[in-house]
Length: 70
View: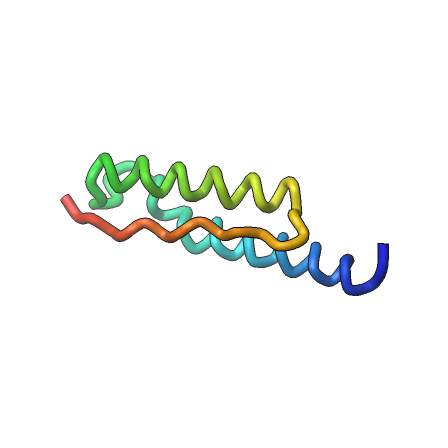
């Protein structure tokens, strides 16, 4: 493994951690989001976790769901 691969792995994990941290609030009960939106964010976050765990060379990041308020 070369230094570029190590940096890429670190950047991918760091980006995934940031995304998860910034979307934590979407999973809190009574967040104000619709049930379908909460589910969409749960699926989104699951995809981000998969990227964080597998660290692909060129990750395809999922699209952020649109916030839908109840």
